[in-house]
Length: 329
Image (cartoon, rainbow, N blue to C red; front, side):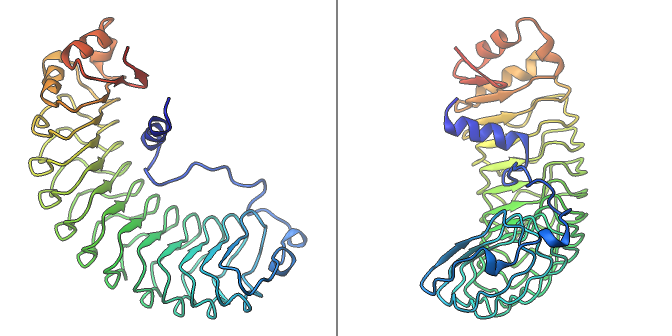
């Protein structure tokens, strides 16, 4: 398996941007005497532009005052509970606080040059106090406890927003983010695709593992190349007439019984339809219209129980390179 194919397999397994990484032993359960002070693990060099203190069991952000030229600060997998003592780091471009114990977004007003902020896997309940970060390009808030999309209207430069694995029920308040190209809202409680009309530059939309029952309101998103809708309650493939640039369409683990309304997707290369209810070979044969199709997943559909399943699929679409997880010979 090539590196590219391996990456695609990983994307199928989870949200496209959620990395599967093992947490350090005992994270969140460390005794007070085991918490490390930043001054004990950092060597202060006023000229340094990058500091990486991942897996440090650090309990508090402090003693960084001399690092006035710092551009990248990585504090993944620590025990930090509060964002603080960063005011002097005005040159900071990237700040990563992934997997800590932070409960509130605060004390970031001076970081006006920040382009990437990652506060995924923390304990945030609300998006707030980010109005000064107008240069932000990428914002990662995955795996928190956020229930409402709010206070993001000023992020006109934002190109990527990751809000997967939260408690969001409604897509809203995104109208002004017109430069966004990647939006990840997988593993929430969203019941309807809506309020995306202004995001015309969107190339990748992930709504995996929500409560959707219908594909709708995507007409304006003519630049979409990747659409992830697996693990929902969708019954019909429909309303993709204007999404002619789609290269990847993920509809795995829904309630779909027919492959239809995708003949016009001439750019389609990846079609993931495993774990649905497709039982008729007649609709499978329609995939012959998609001349660029390279990968099809239909395992755990009724048609896949046919003893000649792979042979029939390859006959229908001779140019397939991979069926399910297996390369074609």
